[in-house]
Image (cartoon, rainbow, N blue to C red; front, side, top):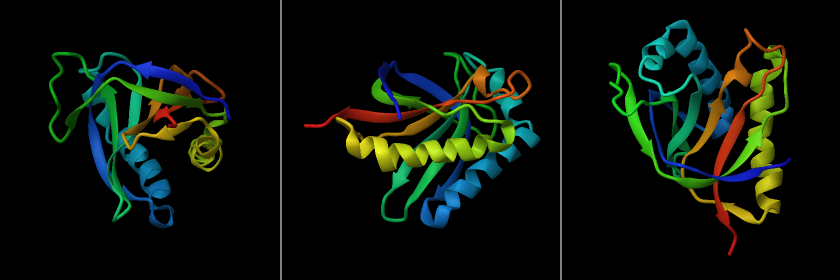
Length: 167
């Protein structure tokens, strides 16, 4: 696995959130189901009028280590004057250093598995063997034009892990 180490400027996100847990792979079921609901209910259409770009984020935030719970937010980068739609939230993420991983290109029917496999490899293989450590800040998925099945036969996206150099 290769990572690009970048400093991402701060940004605001508006989006919709669910709570899920890492226990027994619950998050690996809840998050894809949430994306399906997001698409079926047209939630993204309400957000994109307030978006600075067409890209979407899947953000893991508000971790509770005791219960293994976290919030998963599907959202867009908000324009400065964005109005938050009913039922949505707005979050500010400060400038931070990230290790960025691009998932292997995958056919649409293998895309979710490609994303889940990449997450697993980051924590199982790359992070323990790198010169970086996780900073206990929100992690996120970044979906841009490479993730659009209407335009691409094979899909890919980026995963951002907040890191700092090991002491």
